Amino acid sequence: MFKSGSIDFFKVRLTGGVLMDSRKRWQFPTVLGLILLFVCVLSTGLILFAVCQRNATFYYIKGVSYHMGGRLDYAIANYSEAIEKNPNYAQAYYSRGGACYSMGEMELAAQDYEKYLELVPNAQNRAAVEKTIEEIKSKLTP
Image (cartoon, rainbow, N blue to C red; front, side, top):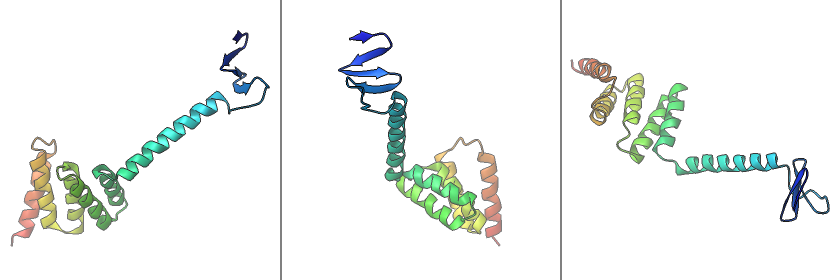
């Protein structure tokens, strides 16, 4: 059963990092290869699960990437999709408000910022957001 330098597993032996049967034929890649294959399959499955879910976080992250790339129209569309999937997604309201502000859609920006503060009443950036809302409202009133 146990021999020096090798371990028998149901007539398959680990010798020199390679699994072989009793006739010294390779049956599987190295143990390290099997582990790497398992990790790759697992991580690919998790990524596919996240992508296929297409949940609010998926659309929010997609919106952030468009926002950072300057594609504000696509960013707003993805933030809106995130909000549709999760109406309490405060960060999506905040980010959509910023994109709307940058596009000159001041009324929508103010609404999103107000909703953000409603959802996160103790936000660390509350004073700055309130100041931005006041600036927007002063621009909108003649």
